[in-house]
Amino acid sequence: MISIVIPTLNEEKFLPSLLDSLIAQTQKDFEVVVVDGSSKDKTVELARSYISKLPNLQVIVSTKARLPLQRNLGAKATTGEWLIFVDADSILMPYFIERILYFIETKNSAVFTTWVKPDTDNIHDCIFTLIANIFLESTILLKRPFTPGPLTIIRRSLFERIGGYNESHAFNEDVEFGLRLGKAGAMADMLRETLYVWSMRRIRREGKMKVIQQLVVAAVPVLLFKRPFKYMPGYTMGGQLYDKKKKKRKSSTLNFKRYELQFKKFMNELLE
Image (cartoon, rainbow, N blue to C red; front, side, top):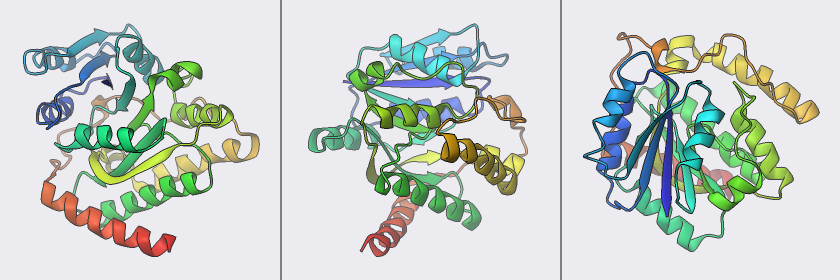
């Protein structure tokens, strides 16, 4: 029922943490496909080393590195009724699949995401992620579909109906995808539990202000013309951007629960 698609490019430092979190899932009935964009490091070798640990794992190597292309290739190689697109530097909680399946069974939602936690306990990262969660909630309240790149769950029939991701986009492919969902009358939903860790490596590397500036610039054509940029100067895909100076990610169930309780309290106050 569940197919997980992971696009990669030079992610040897990060991909193992995600695959380990899949091994640790309480619900084991899912398939995984890693779609690599011809990495220059050991990403493909590491991914293939997990085939014995994740029996339903495929590793595909694309001759071209581009997120929408790799996601589409992964979708075509899988058979599940539901597609989960997740970034290679994310970490999923052990009960991720279990909670996803429960949400699918109890809600009439064709596309959704979940709350997210930062990959450190740094207060500034927590605040930034809180703002990101609020932004996602606001897109739902305003009925403006948005499918975040780090994690999107969608019914295969809907994904195929709107034609998958637009492969001409090197940037904002998730925004463009959301716009087409809106035209198709599909409203995104939110599973209000913190179920995955969002890697903030790009934000730490480039700085919050630069990332915010990029987001503001990217938002202008969407707001004015409902047409996102296809490219963003300085934006590059791949784990090769991140050196060994970055802090090791910390994630624990305890920290997840504390963060989730704080966020639920905030959202309750906001929505009352």
